[in-house]
Image (cartoon, rainbow, N blue to C red; front, side, top):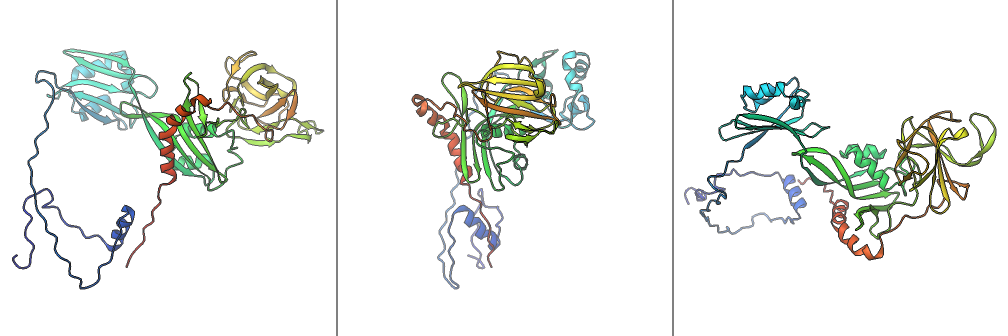
Amino acid sequence: MDGGRKPSRGPGILADRPRRILPAAAAVAVLGLTGVAAFGIAPDTVVDPVATALTVRDLPLPEVSGSETSPAAPYWSEERVRRGDTIGELLARAGIDDADLLAFVRRDPAARPLYQLKPGQPVRVATDADGAFVELRFAPSSSPMLSIRREGDTLSAQRIEAPVATRVSVRSGVIESSLFGAADAIGLPDAVTLALADAFSGDIDFYHDLRRGDRFAVVYETLWVDGEPAGAGRILAAEFENRGKVLHAYRWVAPDGSEGYYGPDGNNARKGFLRSPMAFSRVTSGFSLARKHPIFATWRAHKGVDFGAPTGTPIRATASGVVAFAGVQGGYGKAVVLRHDGAVTTLYGHMSRFASGLKAGTRVSQGDVIGYVGQTGWATGPHVHYEFRVGDVARNPQTVALPAAEPVPPAQRAAFAAAIAPATEMLAAVRHAPRPSLAASD
């Protein structure tokens, strides 16, 4: 060695990489997060040098498959619409200078969506090896994808159904004030939040039962069209801890095509009846045998529960059944009566209107929209009056023991367990994810 310097390592992949000195605190943090133990070295300790050797190998280039005579695949690029953009300016940024294409876009009715571009929307353009235009694709949010192609000297436009790709996302949150507040904080789509509330609505009243510190995790589908997000799909699994009690819901499709949400033991996550005809509402008047009527100022029984909500809020069937009545019924105003199994009927009053096509004899499923909140009949404000009757005797919907829905049949339990295993692992990973904290060191 010359002058105490270490010998050069010679040319190699890492030969010219600059060395970095990590601060002590950062080093401790990195070691802590990677699970590597750090040991101290006493002062004046002599450490033997570690012998190193440099090995250089020539790696063969990968073979390129395909025939030399096969046409080269086009090169795709993407441009985002900017505020004030025209289709000509957008194509120019993509390197396309094609007067025939611009003339075609102006005159062909099928290409009209290109004149309704919104900032941020993607437009994909394909060119050949010479940079000439091959194809343009644009996916409006509310209609099939538009494709403009060049075949020789001919341009054509058509609407095509773009393939939808499904991915799986996992998110978890903690309740601070409300479910929607926690969902917004982690970027959970509103549609998934509503489905999450619906999956646990038989056990949790999301207006009254939530407590600060409650937590949830959800595994759900996200839909993608041509590489762009196109909304949320179904919930595959969810976990909700409410007041220390942990609930689970796993989506499972039975061999006959029916689907539902079940706990890990195969029991139905839903009850036979929902506690409320709306996922998010407030109780404005409870069940009582003696209540002062807000209109007549007389004491009389209130044999149901009033849920306040804005006019037009959807009202859902609390259980599957058949419409026994749909029309105007005295002080109930516009009302619907559903007949269920076991001599149980439910009534929904003061509606503003009924769901389209709803009439006596219509079969509905739990959660189906049957009408909308209103103020018809004897009502002082928009709400739905909900009654739960057993053999024509009114019971308190908030306290009556609700029957359980059908579980997974015993013969299908093994298939069910295998089907939910991947989602179970995802929820467990979220539940036990470490939350490391960094500690400084002198």
